[in-house]
Length: 152
Image (tube, rainbow, N blue to C red; front, side, top):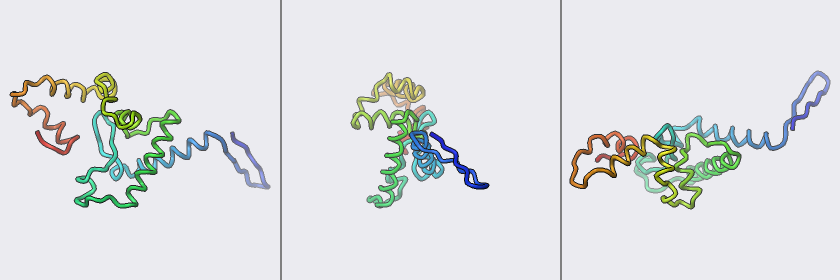
């Protein structure tokens, strides 16, 4: 709901209601996106994941209280956006599916991956179709280097 108030030469617009709430949450989430390299890691199909790996954060095993608080706020904002029907991009649908199903990796079914991550699905199918004695792993190097910070 929007109400306009005039006072002498000043004209003020006052907004309140669900739209303002959603906009506030969206704008707060955008502050994290504006500093995306600090909070998100690029992943498959133009989606991202949360930047929480030790290799990203440095050699320290512990994560600072400030960082944990920031991640909690980011998670809460992302959850609110999902509840409003807004995708919290760049957080990918795979991470959301995993978290919304109680961190159950079985929620990431082949059909789900095929729908939301078609290139990743093709890569995984090729990987699963390999013969155990096959040493033709060159085609997987880019995937493992980009998304797992690892080599095969």
